[in-house]
Amino acid sequence: MFNFIKKRFSHRVVAHQMPKTKAEIRQNVILAKKTWLGVGGPAEFYFEPADEKDLARFIKNKPSIPVTILGGGSNVLIREKGIPGIVIHLGKNFTKYTIKDNIISCDAGLLTIDLSKIAQKNGLSGFEFLSGIPGSIGGALRMNAGAYGSEIKDILVSIRAIDGNGTIHEFEPHPDFLKYRKNALPDDWIFIGASFKGTPKKPEEILQTMQDYKKKREASQPVGVKTCGSTFKNPEGLKAWKLIEKAGCRGLRKGDAQMSDKHCNFLINNGKATAKDLEELGEEVRQRVLKQSGILLDWEVKRLGIKEDIEE
Image (cartoon, rainbow, N blue to C red):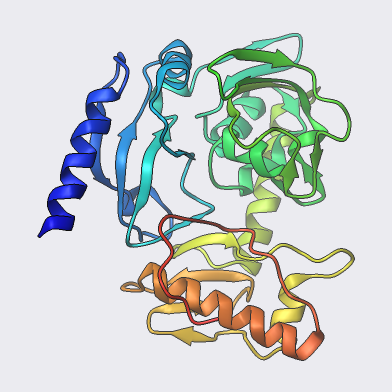
């Protein structure tokens, strides 16, 4: 009882310290429905800023609490005990875009698939690979998302971001800024937008490429299920799915958590899997691959929140 009262009191004190914002800062918001896997506990505090100035003002004046950025929710596994501190989601207020001289400038909350459609309708090639990548532009920048031989860095011109002190920066990244599934931005910086350059091409030809990618995706990856895409990063020079298959983990299950039969580097929720089920299954796969091949796979999925006791 004392711990409960102490926890509630702590929340009230921190809430009182929150800076004034245009958008409401809410408490104990369940995050499961905001993720593709459909699992996860509450955000202690939750904030969808009204615009970049609202976000910058919050970052500059926030109390000393952890900050977690949630994008499209396609590449995260949120644990049941939830995420302490504040979760910031760049939602519908961060989906604007402009087009000029073959360059599309957009906010970080715009979905990758929407950016690919915008480019196609405006006859700009180079964005087709994004039609097969779930999530938001902010998330794609954070992990240098890629597919079909292309990566976000291939079309990137400039970046807008807010640093840990609430200052807005716009800059052209150096060639090594984005590497395989990672970037050089400090962890406390937040992507708020970017500009990308396309190559003029007939919209119908671009659409055909996107349709070809869709057919390939449907033939090789699970669709219509709760999944988060590739679970583990490819080790240098190797394919994670081949190592997983070789270790006998294709279709491996733990309750309703399963490594897909169709693409064994895809972790899926067949209905009632918990975050713990999914994470424990992933850890079991890592250990089996390590035992079989001597390689410890790195998670590509971002696991967020208070860690439970996980069998590893």
